[in-house]
Length: 268
Image (cartoon, rainbow, N blue to C red; front, top):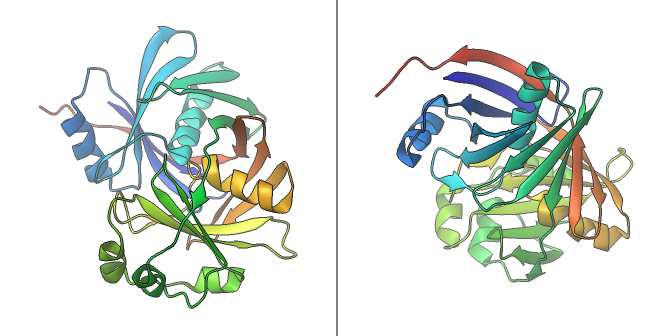
């Protein structure tokens, strides 16, 4: 099975978010895909199957803990591999939720068209705020579709310095997939910074997250009254993307670097 590892949302090696991209020659069970994701040990691994239509593929995503309905960086990674190995200028991916993800390229930049979801007002448990290492929070919202809490704070410096206590964070809330901490950017060419912690459904921290822009980009677009945005994820690896808000969609544009190409040996 051809397998690649791709650093997404970056143009530099060893930056961005590494994703696995697998091309099974035979149908894999859900259990096998989960085991492969655990073997690779990345935040997500994508599995692609050609739909027998030109430049059209089904795509499924697995973290080391569970199947994920939509993953931005693994979609970008998959598109990067396909664009490098075919003559395609556009690609259609179909997800487990029957979302049709339209992906195009222009030079080295890849643009993905994702849906947009609303958020609602929420209150974060004090134990969660404490476990994250925060003292104050400006605003809290929740994405019901994604099961993710968003905490807005004032300082990008505080954001980058966060060192959460994950042993305390996990029991601070039940029934969610993750929590975003985000702050407005000042004078660095970006509109907002963010970090994504999701020990409930994946790894402790996702290095660079595209899927959350289905609601985070709308949050900042409404707050800043801007349709075009630049986002920076201030994790240890860092990463970036440009975002364009449309009526019911958000366009995510960035780059990716293929780090590894190889094959899984046959397994039962």
